[in-house]
Image 1 (cartoon, helix red, strand yellow):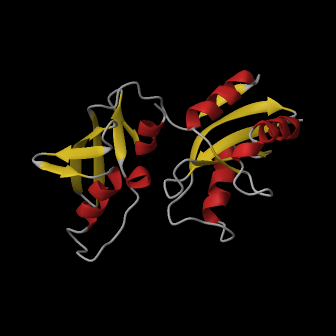
Image 2: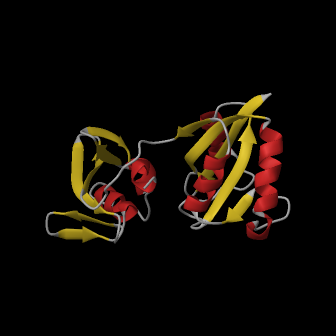
Length: 183
């Protein structure tokens, strides 16, 4: 039997990753997680990466056993662990790795954009500081960049998810800003 082992994150839960399996595509599982009312944080889950493997349940059990000390609830698949450590564990397994977004090598000067109707803001994202600079203005995060843009038409807007609303320029093409997280 084949399936996918996946790793998803959520910016509302920094340092916490969900590692699970699905017989569907990881994207279908992600969509399900984001539409569930069981335990949904205020921001959407993001697929970090997945791997198509044989015997997915056995592999998931092994990973969960290895990470048992990092598990945040005994009956949940959430772990307090660094993304790079999970990536190393996934790299040890045979199978086809599927990255959710293109890999970005250097994000110190990556252009990002946020679009509202025909109004487009373009800034420069710095991964070291997690800030966006647009002209003389510095935004404290990608989400701050997006919410300030929204406030042009809705001054009372309090929040935005920059990771899902913005795009990043990677190899001359505009892709989802989550590409900035896979470094």
